Amino acid sequence: MKRTLLSISLGLAIAAGFTSCRDTEEKETKTIVREVEVEKAPDTVVKEREGILERTAKEVDKEVNKEIDKQIDNIGDDN
Image 1 (cartoon, helix red, strand yellow):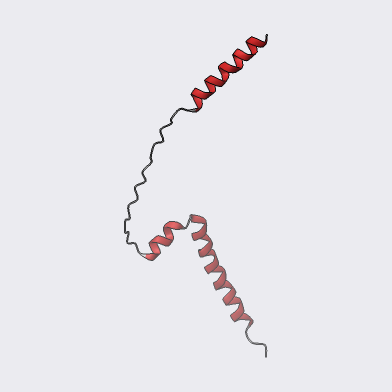
Image 2: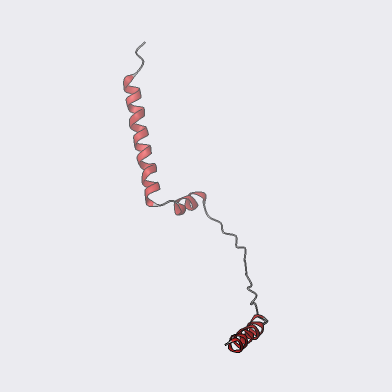
């Protein structure tokens, strides 16, 4: 029993020694970055970045502000 246990542990130690000493090749990854200059009108850039909700919200804000200004003008000066 002792010999069997010792021979198994010796075999595992030798196997671990061979497997841990393997050389692994690491692949180099190359990243290619190119700078490209793009000319766009400022309004076009903003509209492309905004979604439909943002554009709709801006239009609603404009309308609400107009209505608020009208109501303020209707109130007038009570002095």
